[in-house]
Length: 224
Image (cartoon, rainbow, N blue to C red; front, side, top):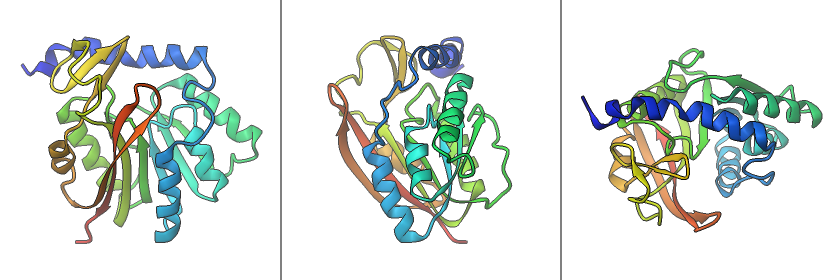
């Protein structure tokens, strides 16, 4: 039994935890698009990538930014309340034709055909309560649904972050801080998960209070 297996019940409870927080606050992470989504929009436009898969979209602050820039976005999140709020906002803004919000647990196979998307984006999803083995499976699924040459842009909190090693250890590089379980990434972990892809860049940046220290990773699916 791995460290992750021992903490499975605690890790699984995070879905209820996020649902509760999203239900209490309709703009839990604010309304402004993240730095990473602004960077992604520039990259997607330059490379001509317009059909986007977003994982862990939350209440849609980045999703709506993508749609406002003319991208077609399939946005997945495992919180029902977040998906409902995202859909409501998209309808209110007249963007329902560009946003398809789907409630889905990313640990399960995605409901899409092979080679369906031009790019995949996610902001801090991979540093949630996901074990290394689950991350490897998710990356395999992402590569499956991406077209050859498709882009993967994601952010994660890294091991230089002030919270790394603090709070309750929940196995591997995961720590629980004030109810939130965070999986911290080293550069080695980024490289390990990039199988089948070329690493275009790994940028370090800061965001929010503390401030959080993150990697902004850009990959390209290899053309076989």
